[in-house]
Length: 299
Image (cartoon, rainbow, N blue to C red):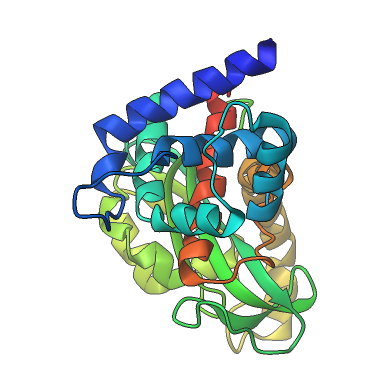
């Protein structure tokens, strides 16, 4: 009975989200706007319920689970091909759902007078040196030094507001090609970062960014890079300070690294190996982020 109530509660929440905002963001192909016997709300409910309740992260696994255990609740559920097509048709609605979830999770205080943590996580479509074919306008092949492997895919950039003894509260995300450097993603939102401290890794630091943030009464804190052309004695002289400073910054950034580990475990966002289209890729990324935020909301 408890699981039945969870399903009903999730459906009711998504119905409210859909009627207030999402219905205006989903594509309509029929002349009269009729969804058919199986509604968009039911599609979203099936998708998120299987992720949240059974950790079914791939669309085929989600469909098979709902057919096997919940077909009586969704008697009009279509074939897998139709289900997948209808889900991908809702790709534009997922980013707006994230906004609604963010409002429900916690009132956002913006970027002002906050400690902000920024980092990125790879979305892997395929591994190895071979060229991928999915979403070439978005994805690219690159080498991940942290994982020690070549992969084809994207990067999900994430900024969160630091919170005491818990995971950072998400306030900004962006998708970029895996081959793109991290710095341009930060430059795109510099104008909003006023009166705050931003903690990131070395990839986010540059003189230009540091100067603009200081003009906005903000501060970018990253481990200190070794200066180009630095002499050996200078490197040795600064070694102890850089090491201690880097550890201090890393300790503050630890919650966002823990957040990435958590979101990978809970919703499987990093594995996009079964994605077969650009629309499917957007559903995978924004849908999994939305599922993670639903977990934080208690679903």
